[in-house]
Image (cartoon, rainbow, N blue to C red; front, top):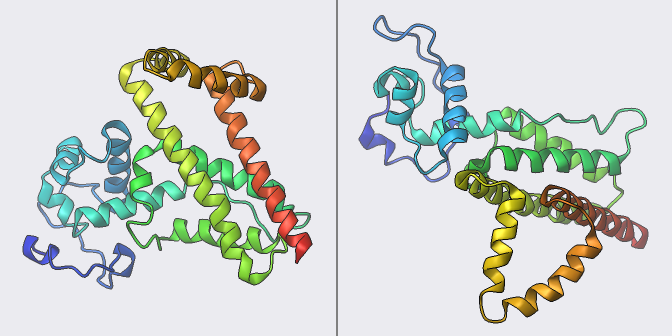
Length: 255
């Protein structure tokens, strides 16, 4: 097992998926039924309930009714565990087969983008972990490979395909991250999305210049439609995604 001192000396570029050691067997004094899968699942539940800031190995061990050292028997660091949790979340997304008969890249792009958005909303803590780690777990690689093949099927020239991927999925990441934090804030205050929105609009009107700003914004909000905040968020996401798809089609036509 890696010591606390050794854990602080790990190279910057590392990953739990690059470990070469074989999984340790259970010691006689280890709790029965404890393994990486169970620890990872408990980590996800705790992160969903309390967020990343409150997460610790001790908190996890207490939640599972074991000692912290028992957890370290299966993972060397908290970073390893967070990386495992992140990859397990990627596994929640249903992925299409871009090479299947009759596959339409537009429909598949819409589906994967919507699934990624839903993931960021359901698990707001993953936003700060995406890019922090190498993201080379099996589920993350399956997601990346599917996206790559969908973008390939658009007909974009090879030198434009990474730009197409970035345009769509960095948009989804940004939209899903902001929406996830907004929904968490509403939940923390015990308010519905609509109640929180109305209170925020009232507060904005009370500041100097707020009234004029909102009068102009309300014309746009009325034009976009939707009776609830939920509907407006969905419309904004869908319409923005259609702009992305139209942009890809335009660049393919130019090429």
